[in-house]
Amino acid sequence: MKIKRVLISVTDKSGVVDFSKFLSKSGAEIFSTGGTLKALQAGGIPAKSISDVTNFPEILDGRVKTLHPAIFAGILARRDVKEHQEQLEKLKLSMFDMVVVNLYRFEETVASGAGLDEIVENIDIGGPSLIRAASKNYEGCAVVVDPSQYSEIVAELGRSGELGKPLLGKLAAAAFEKVAHYDVAISQFFNEKFVGGGPLRDSLMFSGRKSMEMRYGENPHQSAGYYGDFEKYFEKIHGKELSYNNLVDVDAAQRLLQEFSEPAAIIIKHTNPCGAAIASTIQEAYTRALKTDSKSAFGGIVAVNGKIDASLAAQLNEIFLEVLIAPEFSAEAIEILKKKKDRRLIISKKSLPNDVSVRSSCGGVLAQTVDDVVLNEKDIKVVTNKKPTEAELADMKFAYAVCKHVKSNAIVFAKDRMTLGSGAGQMSRVDSVKIARMKAAEAGLSLQGSVAASDAFFPFSDNVEEIAAAGATAIIQPGGSVRDADSIEAANRLNVSMVFTGIRHFKH
Image (cartoon, rainbow, N blue to C red; front, side, top):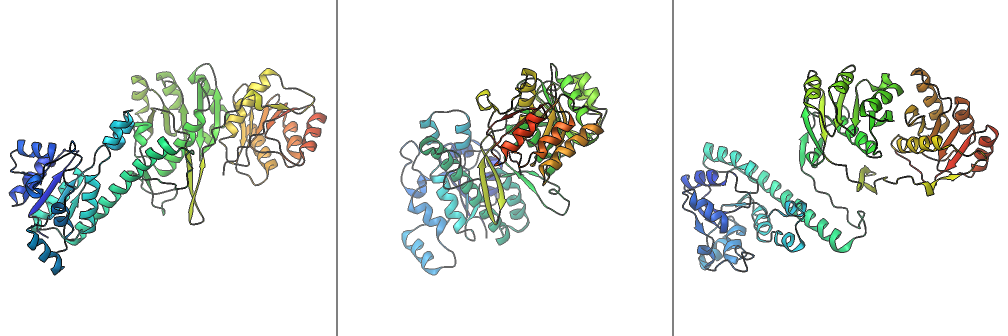
């Protein structure tokens, strides 16, 4: 299809003057609106006003300018339908061969914190209508919705003087995606503003553009991509591209880190924390977190909630780490850490949102709110004769926060707000206890006087017995088992304090 008559109306004017010059020099007649028309004419392009087609002025502050039969008939008429062409001829209307439109900046306006009136004014009406019309008639009217598409169109027109069906279809697909994304953003805003009901409404809508290419997924034979706005929360300042597994681990690390306001360090391996600690300084927190399981930390991800300076950078360089996450890196630290060219350095810009967690299941999608419950004093119920000390209580809160982020069945031993051993993802909870004990022993860490946290209740008292045998003096768990009395009896017999929270933290 040759391009003889074009309608151009864009909010994003980047590249539009050069693109229009190419079309004009190729013999295309260009019609435009408002600010776009002024920009094209200022660029020396003989563009005409859309009013020359409609014989009607733009009205209502520009709300109505392209919504007219003379425009939409010229876009929607099929070239291969005789009756359509006869009607156009009878009405003295001409077809458009191309529509170049991008939309009002609705999402950007919402993100700016603008008032409701300004947000509503940035809901585009004519733009989506033009895009949908041209996309429906894609074989007869090329539709262009993004400046990034200009170069491919120019290249094809330059080669053959016309656009082929494959590119026309590709442009239409991108156009429908653009409008769908736009409609989802508007719907979500209005639902949040006027309907409420939390994030899990009757219709789950998500529209994300692929913003990061993945070499592969969890394994090399799986393809993958990232859809979303990584740059809203993080900034990668060094290293090779992030992988699928890196992004999963970055999310896991940052979400656990967000549990703590004190200087903290988290080490993640395969989404599980293999080390976590709170201390008076970030470097001390990392040193203590690494002690938990330095072997598993190899090839892991480290996240801290304070500045990485040169001293900590030198220490981090002592082992192989895939990703380092911090809100700030000193200039000296960056120079030290950049010596390993592939390792990713990421600045955490803001907290990840506690909105909705989504996963595919059974040919559909499961959605749930994020497990963002924070343990409060009022949630804690002492159920044993022996009460925990203040130090034990502080350690139990810390261990329980970490345990929430360990795959079920999960057990975490801790002391002085440092993890000593973790057991993750076992079919039997008592096996998780045994693995946590084994990991602590491998690291040369004593569990004497430690506390233990469990993400869910103990089905049998053998869990309490195994924990007590390891040397722990206090246990925190949700409670709720039909055999709670057996666990309480075992704790009393073994002189271990135990508290129930009533809050389960399964993580599958």
